Length: 170
Image 1: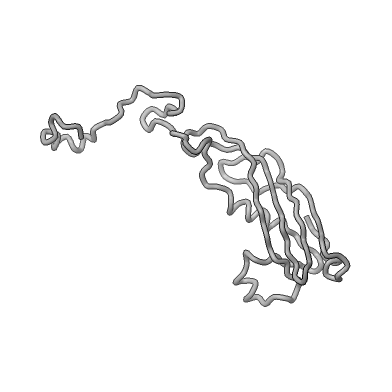
Image 2: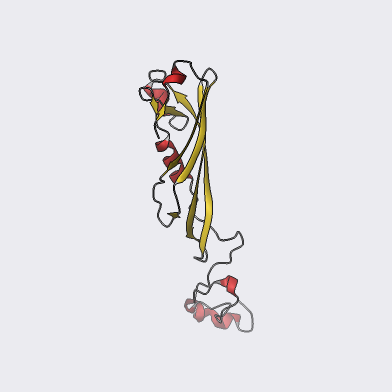
């Protein structure tokens, strides 16, 4: 969404509220169930600050047991808003995560929101914090109960040394 910053740059307003929908960038293994709802505010108190929140429902798989997981992903973003010509290129390069730049009299926060959503989305999502995962031998979800696989299996490469441990549990 393109925000018209001209009234704020002229000092006519001190606060600009915005609320819109944004199509998120696709992520591998994640399905976004709808567009992201973005709402925020830009204030001018001697310097311009942008505060925004974006929320989008998602569906993915548990990283341990592959069960479907749905949730609401939320991104909070705070940036200083810089008018054209107020920052040197060095300042912009050194503080790329701190500033968002007005181009002409317009500000487009979409790129910042999309970048933050991509960078901040968890790499592993769990169905529950204590998810036991899958049995590595048969693939049965451990939360559904025990499988018939043996608890311990001796590595055949160590069979040559087995007579040293006869009668002892290794």
